[in-house]
Length: 204
Image (cartoon, rainbow, N blue to C red; front, side, top):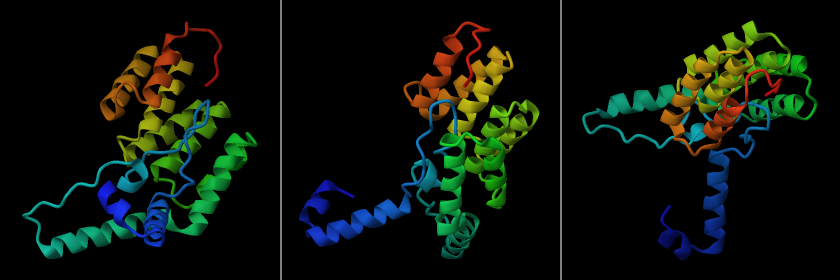
């Protein structure tokens, strides 16, 4: 909303607008934690911060309504209090308690395994448990859901480094650069990991 409009609004009205904006982008969307994770990014424009694309002028009103209805049905779970609460709980289980096995159970219980944020966290948890095969499967699942899920590219890149696949990790780095550039945290984190000498025993 333009600054000129905000400045002309009464304080009470401004508070309502800002509160509404806060609810549209839930505060629970986590910044990635040190060592890997699964916040941000997703197929949803709101969750990923991707700019909304204007509808083509050639679209008919009926087509637009069907598209909006389909998107609403597909992504409505993201706004459900129960989903938000359970996701936050699983995230805390990973980063506060480091109980990866329990976190996997919590995440799968959400019933949205194909949601990129969820799949990425499951992949991360399996990686921390040392199950690289299952971890890879879940990272691939996250990218199938959202090929531009930048955090999956980052943490899957760390997976590649841990497996000794540095050339593949470099490819992941180029994918990240194509999504958010070379100054975003995801790029800088993976680039820093690649700068470390092989066999240093670092754990991400």
